[in-house]
Structure formats: C-alpha cells, structure tokens
Amino acid sequence: MIFNTGAALLDAIVLAVVSRDEEGTYGYKITQDVRKAIEVSESTLYPVLRRLQKDDCLQVYDRECGGRNRRYYKLTSAGEAQLHLYREEWKSYSRKISALFLGEELL
Image 1 (tube, rainbow, N blue to C red):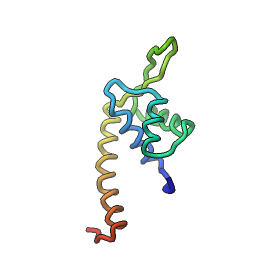
Image 2: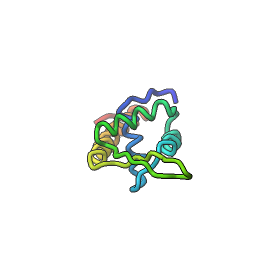
Image 3: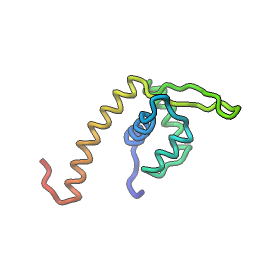
C-alpha cells in the first residue's frame, strides 16, 4: 500500500477486527485479519494491542489451546465507544476523500 497508515487508523482497524468476535480473538488471528486490509507486521501490531489495552479499550485474558496459553483480546465498553467514534469519523473522512478523487464538489 502506498498510503501511510497512521496510529489512529491502525487502532480503528484493530478494534474493528477484535469487535467481530464477542468472545475475543488472539493476536495471530488479529494480525492475519488486519493483513486482509493493509500490510502490517506483527512487530507493529503488538504495540498497538498493548496501547489499546493500556487505554482500557481491550480486555486481555489467556486461554489454554493445545497445551499452551494463548492471549486473547476482547473489546471493553470503552473500546466499543472508541470504535463507534472511529466509525463515525471514517464515514465523514472517506466520503470527503472519495469526492475529491472523483472530482466531485465538497459540501
């Protein structure tokens, strides 16, 4: 992708991916799902997950899987509120950018 992905957009994408499963999801799956939208390394994503946890947007818990513990991430109520804000901002932002690219007049 030739466009840089800022921290806020990456946060929004991660929250959107995590929100798709009520029980939460684990780091590797989050990485794979995010990569369906943008190219990103695990070394980039794990600090995002830690920051979102620190900001009380994600709850973290461990679950045994195949004899090993797997770390799961789940949205908190603060995370749901933040994701809602990101979605609303994205609607406005993407509408304006699309209008510019299509040569339409901005309102």
